[in-house]
Length: 245
Ligand code: GDP
Image (cartoon, rainbow, N blue to C red):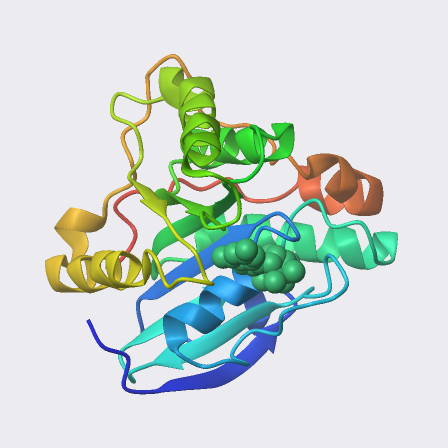
């Protein structure tokens, strides 16, 4: 799949600020420093599509880009960022949770994980949260050029071993490097295939029946600290079947 244009649409602080639901959306999320900005630039072919931040956690808003006039690339704020005021943190973390759970035109989430690191609890927790909430996602191991292939392979194997019990079938795994361009055509390929397939093929990843239905996001402590009342009263929805894509 080619990208003929990549145009910034808007930054949204919450679900209400998101654009209309007319285009299918593909969202990218990862811990700060996971290599998300670099990957988005690599994917889009634009060196400055997403800012490569010198400060972990710089991006605090949900950023929308219209790609080839037919789909949207959604740059979600990183979880586990270190900087920023508590109130803002709570707000955008809740916004991410709402976006992932409630956005009807969200087709697929790309969960980014640094392949140079052993499994990080925050990443494992986040994948568990995605699974429990039936959010459709694939795993993207980033920076594969950074460490020796054997280290990368060991880290990926260790991560998948941690999450394997939650799935009837493991989520799809991609290996990417923004430095070498590895994985670009594969990621664009899965986006193209999802767009071509339409609603039937974009159902959430099957989840093992041993999981409880509803849990808090791994970043819920910050959410609770900032706005417990709002979080407690949030509407709980199961989007399976509600998505037009
Ligand atoms: P973000 O915080 O998740 O948006 O991560 P960035 O894209 O800002 O990258 C964080 C750091 O990792 C920066 O110093 C990047 O230059 C570096 N980085 C990102 N992707 C790669 C990659 O594919 N290979 C290597 N070697 N370094 C990378």
